[in-house]
Image (tube, rainbow, N blue to C red):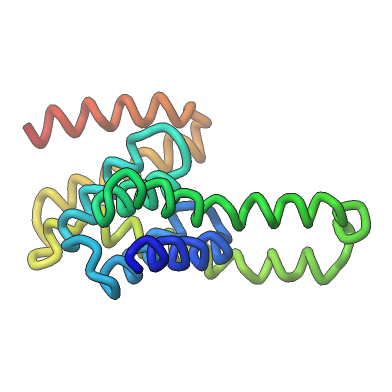
Length: 179
């Protein structure tokens, strides 16, 4: 039953994966809390680990949640559930691609999804960026974190820095300030 729950839950999430993995984190969190697969703190740590590991964060999160809930078989079932919808959708869309890619309905649908995806990513950033400090959201660590984020935004957007350079520099600043 647990394996079936993992598969169906991540299959649903996989079918709703508009906007990438970070937009799916709130949905994964909801499923984890609803089924009680792991405590919230363990989920937050899993998402942090999934974000640092190579590959898509949503798939990595599915693998870690599945492993925590039901071991290696659970990890496999959750991962297959997460990736199967993408595989099916890519096969279907690619077979009809030349018929629909210039359709106004397709363009307007994806344009309409942009604010939803942006909101879900913002939620994930706020929730996981400040998860350990939610009881006291206004302190010096939050201020420094927001300043680093603003600096990264300016460096990438205005000065066209490579994102990897901003990640390394932000890590060094974080180590220097928070250690």
